[in-house]
Image (tube, rainbow, N blue to C red; front, side, top):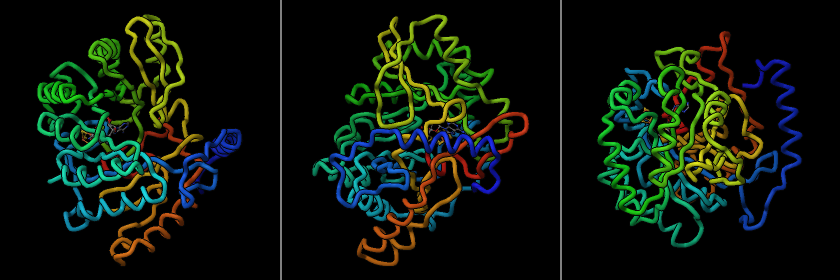
Length: 363
Ligand SMILES: C[S@@+](CC[C@H](N)C(=O)[O-])C[C@H]1O[C@@H](n2cnc3c(N)ncnc32)[C@H](O)[C@@H]1O
Ligand code: SF4
């Protein structure tokens, strides 16, 4: 994957390596067999794509006509539980279920319920999920009952027609009803909005007022060049430097030292009192503090969202009822975690940086 990188990229990699060496790595509380990568980053956060399927077809995430994996290739809920538990045994303290749409996976609450034992034991600090909200009305109170306290809901617009255009299949009312149900169940919500050129760029302030007015955080995300999606990425891509400058003309944005363990940089918006996050994989790379890895619903481990290198965990999982092979495979894979990614979207780079869609690795 690194073979085709140019001098600019190499310079960036050097800069990143230098910044990594200056990070103050907190080793307290790590298990003795913790997953530590070659850059001394401890892997404590696992994102699990429980299905590649979804009831929406967001224009930046999927093509309209997608070919999904045959069911036989997908790990059973029991296998997903075993895989997640192996990561927990190796020091993962935060687990996020994602997809595709995690809440369309059949019997998903069985997995949430069984994973919640790691919350009860104290091994896991947080069990959470990222959802499009379409099924929240049905599942919000069960999630809360199983120990989920915070969730991310993806919502790019409050305009029903625009919502339909962005998601192709989605119904805004259903998502808002899901958010209502989640708040009523006591779940804290962070809204994730992808900034889309010419689509919702005039609405970010509206989303900000709405989310903060309802006691929710808002995070805006730069579109990433993952997978073929029918549209040009250059037409979609809106640098968050522009979004931030526009908001700063209207609001007082105070940088704050808040982190949810993810890549967002947060500000406090003085006028609303709420938190606003920026996820900027393109305009500002966040790899130096990366503590996470991702697994797909087939048990493929991606050590970096923006790179192709992967490890097959399904084979060691299925080869033996004991977890020894699996633990060995995890240790080996972490030695291959790269320093970082370098997404580019410009006139010369309009094709996907990577062939896989975000729905495969779950963002
Ligand atoms: C892949 S979705 C999976 C979970 C769930 N279906 C949802 O939409 O929240 C996770 C997150 O990735 C974001 N996303 C998808 N494709 C993206 C892309 N190409 N660039 C940036 N964010 C993307 C979505 O907006 C969503 O917030
Ligand atoms: S962003 Fe989420 S809701 Fe939209 S198509 Fe991708 S997986 Fe589905």
